[in-house]
Length: 452
Image (cartoon, rainbow, N blue to C red; front, side):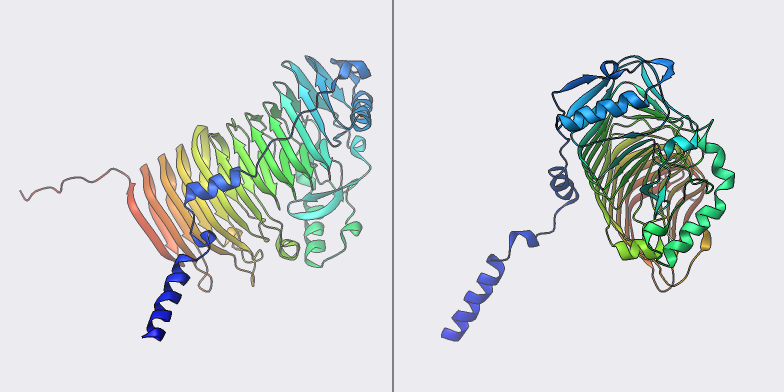
């Protein structure tokens, strides 16, 4: 009897004393836990008008020296807010942000960057399509700094159409060389690009930074990706407007980054609106820093694709929340998860809720065989939860899943999904544990017709 009582007591203790953390959190609880860790940086009270450092918004004067002086003053004062009044400010070279610095572009202010590639030397550590390299400096560049912000109602014009964008047709040899260096594990310090290699720089890049805010500004005419968050964390991006129509003009590219809030954005760019990445192939798997804890909400999508994960995602992507978003125009694809058998890694714990698109080519496209490339490193794609998703039409396909026989895409949930008009409703291959709840593709079928 004593033994029986002891067993009962042990069982009670086991269930009653289970740690609270063992309870599986709901989508909302997981999201809210992430939001607690995303706090915008405090803006310095030291106001530094760019005009005090010789800045002139006359569209003629080179304002690079003025920004360099203002940034040195920020460093000396251990923080500052550089205020740029209305006007057109030419810069013959990049802005390199320092810690505890904010640039505020007042309404009517526009930064226009030089088209001369020599102005973006010497080479800086950066990344290009998922591979670490030394290359031309991004036009606005923050490296290993904390508490940086770009705010205001002004515009940052990368002048890409007249400059770096013309390199797109020349980049292939350097692009292939960077990938070869990646696969062969060549030391990063030996990966020297720049002059003669035609790899375009990003408009804005934060590399190994913490506590970032980008708010209110309009971003246009980028040479390459528009905003690249690289190995960075605690990031807030809100109320930004995109007008970027050159080749590869992605909106936001978080890579190896975490704790990110992207909200109330008006996208209008020629490539992916948000493309979540985590390194390419061997280097990504070796780096093993997943992109995670990313919240995208209350945005208006317009461009090539709405939300993309991949294809450079070899270190893995997890805990992504897309919610309460609409559209400002056409997107080729709404939700696009893409990888191939060179990548490896994983895509998991993805939550799409209350999102609406208009006319698209494909609604939801999940593929492990992007471009049908690669072998030996199939990606594990699982645990994707799509709820309250609507499309007006899908001219090609509504819902597509493509896995591998030895690595099937699994545990994908579709709930309250509606596509009003669709050419091909469903195309699933090498997929398992697919759950449907209230899915309507085409016209809803109601009462069955009676026999006549």
